[in-house]
Structure formats: C-alpha cells, structure tokens
Image (cartoon, rainbow, N blue to C red; front, top):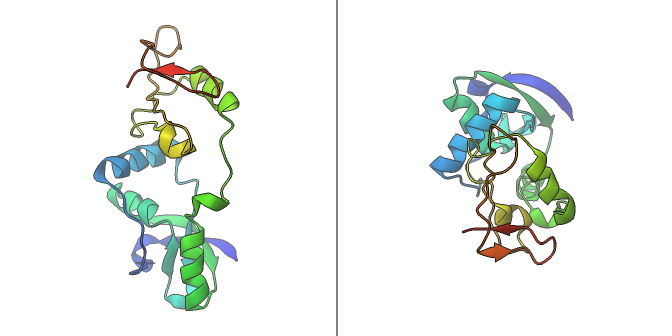
Length: 162
C-alpha cells in the first residue's frame, strides 16, 4: 500500500459499486472538498486497471469541481478482496460511535455554517437516536440560533424543532 497522486482520467469506477449519492448530498460533498480539500483519499486497486475501490462519490465531486488529479491510496488486491474492501470501507458496523455528550457541545461551539455541506443530520450520523439537527450559526454571537421545542435527546437533553 502506498499513496500517490493520480489523474482522475486514469481511474476506473468499479461497475459493481453498490453506493449511490443524491444530488443534494453530492453538492454538500463538493462544498466540503472546496472548504477542506479531499482529506479522505480514494482507494485504487492497481491490480485491476486502477479500479476505484472506495471513494466513488469523492471521485465524482472532484470531477464536478474540475479537479484533474488527487492523492490516492494504492492497493494490490485480487478481485474478491477488492470487492470485500469496497463493502468494508462503507460498513457502519465496524466504525466508531458518537459520544453524544461530547458531540452536542462541540456542535454548539463551532462557528461553521453546516448548511453548505447539506443537512447536518445527526440521525444519520448516530443512527440509534431519533433526532435531526441543522446547526445554523448566528454570525453576531457565534451561538446557535434556536427556537427550542419539539424533541429532546434522551441521552444529553439537547432540544430542537423539526
């Protein structure tokens, strides 16, 4: 495994890739890349004609932004391991979990307008909790705007409107 800058035109999306992205989410990903660069690298299998194993949505966002090359993690895998890695890279069951008691104050303190990255949907981040948060920062005070009501997180007590 090594990291190397490759031209996007030399990469081949995996025809079997089961992941999709909505236009809205793709725009959010493009805005994230514009703000932070492509910090999560594409994974490319050099043993299979530079097939993208992981990072298909980032690849599309980079192309949409007119970016012609990016750093990639290069792997040398047989076809079975390539497909297994494709699935593994997106398996939420082997990823870490959010500590809501730390996440909520972190979101409160950030002076970032997350709306440019699409909805900050904690339900999709956390999964086990039934709530959504779309953080919007008040530029005057750097405090989240909120009209509290509606729902409350059972773990941390955070309140929000739907």
